[in-house]
Length: 195
Picture 1 (cartoon, rainbow, N blue to C red):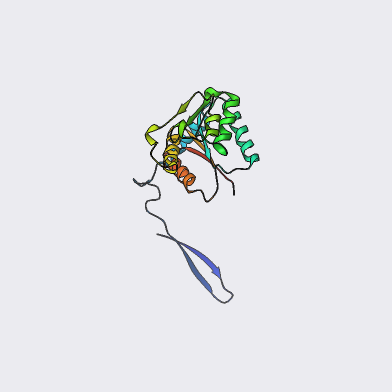
Picture 2: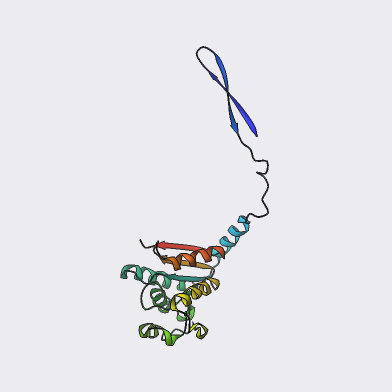
């Protein structure tokens, strides 16, 4: 512990006051249980600087049309830059907009991972997936609830990407869990809150 002394003059007497500044003896050492943030930052920087990335776009189904149009435009632009878009099926919302945008630019740069099988998707989702060349189905999840299968699907999508873009509300527990999982996997993450 170090002490710094300061002199202050009072009209009648000279007083000496001291300020105590604690100094940690280990300030220059890295604790063995602390994460190596330099390596993590270097990995994130390398991912950002890659010319082509695997970008996951997931998010809420309940979006106004203007947000869907923005996501569609974003997906189109990302694919035109040479990136691969990874998402899941959806008749409306984020995933549907990402699919439409990627399909406009280059269907070969789109990967759709379904929580279950195409046959278990609503007919409008099945219609949207016509022409998508790279669809991953999971018959092994056929007996799971859609909510459980979707959680597993989000993790699979995140495992397959370098970067995650997520559109969600503050109350979306499933998507918050997905973002947390991406953080634990040291992915580059962009989160857009819709509320």
